[in-house]
Image 1 (tube, rainbow, N blue to C red):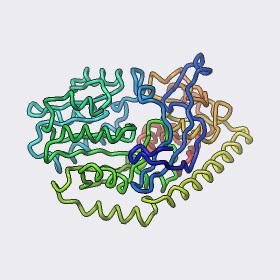
Image 2 (image 1 turned 45 degrees about the horizontal axis):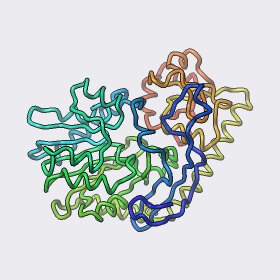
Image 3 (image 1 turned 90 degrees about the horizontal axis):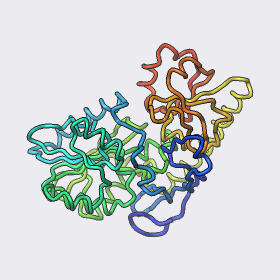
Image 4 (image 1 turned 90 degrees about the vertical axis):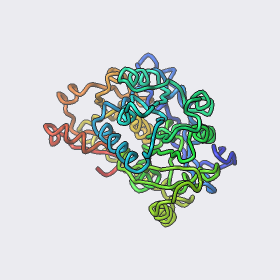
Length: 398
């Protein structure tokens, strides 16, 4: 295994076995040709970086049929509105140009629309990018690379803010990404991004954060160390509750801003909790193995008692849970979802049928496996009428 930043050899410390593409929901006729890859994770001690060994090519994951639209979640729409307000309050002085990497359907970027500000979304999935354009959000359908950055000549050294949300962990070539940032940002420009947080994953044993799209699991320590190699500095962070626990990072050119106290505080916290070192990885592996055993025993007990189980939300995260734990259509009758493109298809590798919400509400199971556990509040509020008609379970505490 080769570290994607240092290019040095590292040993994988944990394997999840053969995994499919997390968002690769498919029809029955494609079962035999389903793509699988060996999913292992490793840790680069010098830069405290948790990363995948292998992953599918980006175009296999982000293409014209990408199934997730941010606007489908009221919770995420509100989060992005709050995120934009946070940026405007702290880092929006004399802003003329703002770019979002992995802009999805424009739900975040539209909060910055103004006749005095140039906004640009860069989105690799064609269907999602086209939808953003229809919503009036200036979007180009490309992967963000140094090559892409060089094509944006009017933004060269003139971009005030580049932002992202749950997108940077998807990009395997971070060095190329940073070259692109360096090309576009002006002297006082900032790069603001938020990603699932390694510390939260360790704390909750939420191993479902690990799947093909999440090539990296960042921490304050790793982000600080990576960007310092290229003349940048981590100046601010802000913990978030999204995705089961995320962290917002603010990067600037070295020496242009004062580093906030919270950065120092979080670095000390990560050292104390072994988030910045290999000991944390070993502890996490042990917790995952224990969690897997407990979940399998619980499901076996439910089935043995004659009760049935259905799933709620066919998420990317569910792909890791199901296939790591060996749970499939023999254990779970169906999974309900709101995304039209998923209905009538099956979950990757585990081949559980995906149904619409009406089917779920008309066929309420004895137990419901909440795969979208990080959206529990929103879901439970929506399902008030049937909340007590089924027992809710998950691989984490809910």
